[in-house]
Image (cartoon, rainbow, N blue to C red; front, side):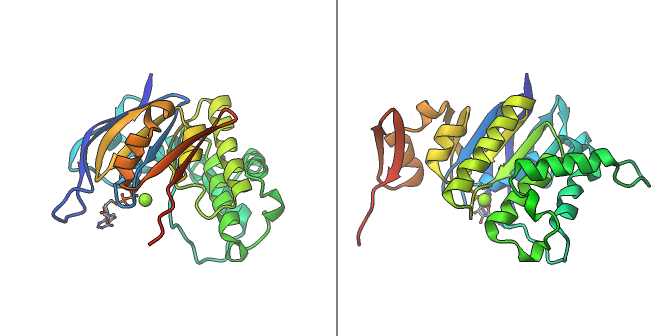
Length: 260
Ligand code: ADP
Ligand code: MG
């Protein structure tokens, strides 16, 4: 069953060209779908449309067989967790306070957090590997710690859908692998659908059930990682020479180094 159904959406920020043009995609329950493509190709715009933050001028998005237009803000937050790019906050919250905000869509009006909410928040902090930072001020976090805090908040939301926009940007390699494997495990164990934007082609290749190749606001192709990660497809989408190396049953995708 498709949990997300995007049909022929077009979104324009008001300029001469559409940021995304006639995009259709479907995501099944428990599936990890990764969108890859060059800067400015429309990846974030697609996620923002699915999350209800942007309203496409043309086309239709349904989540759980209901049009996104019919969702209240609270219902959207109960259904989807969005981990955004370049998100920042200048207030002096603690990590725990931010993660607990993930519980907001579940808390009844005029009622504070329950012990259960704290338990879920603590569990999310542990899964994201930042339990030791729970009382730290968010202003003191490194970029990677910040990313993991935002993941913990998304986990704390316990929604059936996670929309992750470049979740590993700014993380060192250990934490990149760590974050992607936590995400994959959660998706597998709890049947969570994940739509993810990644720049790292090797992570995309290893952690996705399906990959969408985006170029200039349009879907060039979509399919399994093996079908999508070919030299021809990637060179066309990124417009740069790429090598695909098979080494010890591992596929390594790497751009050709160009010296000017
Ligand atoms: P990606 O995430 O793939 O880098 P985006 O979805 O952010 O791409 O952007 C797609 C296109 O829309 C780009 O040309 C970008 O400049 C434009 N765009 C994105 N956000 C805005 C905005 N707030 N106002 C105007 N144009 C925007
Ligand atoms: Mg983006």
